[in-house]
Length: 174
Image (cartoon, rainbow, N blue to C red; front, side, top):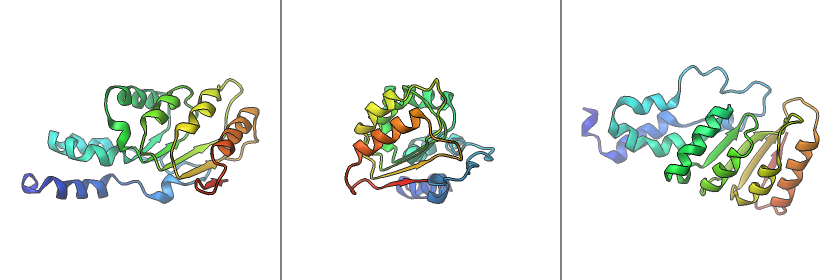
């Protein structure tokens, strides 16, 4: 029966199945709302090639990165394909260095970015600071997760202040 659905109808259904709640996306809680999920949204698209083709834009609409491996995989995928155009929201639950530069540049339609400002002394934030200017997001959410500010965190905050001098890019800082 599902094979009789028009692609547009299937896309609307998959949009609902793959949607990430904005409260989860923008959460600044100490515990990630994505930490207890035991399945990947991508598994939904493994039903058949048609679901993969029709549902891929919905899958990439909101991207949550929680590990270096995920960031590097996304970076490689964005190098080889046009998937970056599907990314509207990007949530970073960690620090992913130079991978972020390529992800930012490929995500040409990004509207929202959410990330922590918790860094270790070894984290190189300079690539991020230079690349944030290429992001055209209209909403940026920063949270610090109960840790004290570091030199790296202050560099990132300064880069964001410089990037967002007007109210056209609201910054929510927690």
